[in-house]
Amino acid sequence: AKADGRGTYRFFETGMDARAQARRLLEMDLRAALQRDEFQAYYQPIRDVASDRVVAFEALLRWNHPHRGLISPINFIPLAEETGLIIQLGELVLRQACSDAATWPNDIGVAVNLSPVQFKNPNLIASVTEALEKSGLAARRLELEITESVLLQNSEATLTTLHELRAMGVRISLDDFGTGYSSLSYLRSFPFDKIKIDRSFVSELATREDSVAIIRAVTGLGRSLGIVTTAEGVESDAQLELLRREGCTQAQGYLFSQPRPASDVAMMLERPRLR
Ligand code: C2E
Ligand code: CA
Ligand code: CA
Ligand code: CA
Image 1 (cartoon, protein in one colour):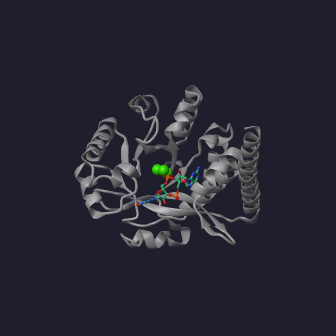
Image 2 (image 1 turned 180 degrees about the vertical axis):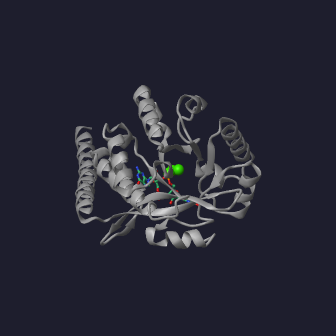
Image 3 (image 1 turned 90 degrees about the vertical axis):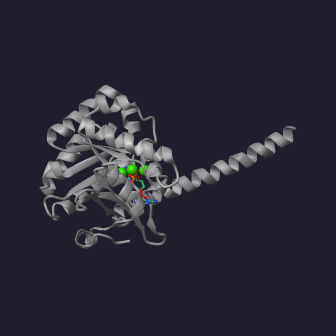
């Protein structure tokens, strides 16, 4: 039994080593990539459902790795958050998004995702201010997307930060609505301009009656609270039709376009659908 225990322990230890090593390698790779400027914001259009016009683009981070190609943020954001590198990475996206958006028509906004780690950083307001000043982008054109997990943290500090950002003219969106510890009281306690209905509800629209009920409830809530609703992950005309019928304000998804580099923004503004 002792030998077994030891064997198991050794095996476990080796497994941990391998994992820890993979993590260390990825961390080194991330740091080098920041030095080598391998990160780039891609943009996905957000459309107004009633007018069918593009109203904004969401910036989505990509790592353009010299050997591994384009890497999705889900593969490196968690480690960037653990190591604190997300602060640097987040500032980079914010600066890039603001300076790109400053070259677009001035009724087109830009949405930037904020990690809860960035949100807790006391420098957040200063870096948002700096990104706006350096780019010349009007604050009203910038939307910051936060997830519900931010609201679980120190709520008084969170509230102060949200109010400061809004006082600057920046808009705040609640991302992935319905997936976390959603509580309707958040909508009353925190000043949001927009609710983004998570993709999972949209993708189940055709197959689940209760998803339709949820979309109806959220769009209704948005209307009565004066909050814009955006549906994420719209992939079909049937989904778009249903969203239109339910009075959802905006839609975003592969039906219109995948996220693309900044050089494709003009094309995305001209052509209604690019898949
Ligand atoms: P998110 O903010 O919920 O972004 C939406 C994700 O859904 C994006 O994945 C987008 O490419 C994808 N998507 C858009 N339309 C469709 C569709 O019709 N169908 C499907 N199946 N997917 C669609 P992406 O770009 O891989 O980003 C994943 C997540 O990584 C984001 O989820 C966000 O949480 C995070 N992320 C991305 N960029 C940043 C960033 O600059 N900073 C931070 N902190 N997080 C970021
Ligand atoms: Ca988002
Ligand atoms: Ca989302
Ligand atoms: Ca998401």
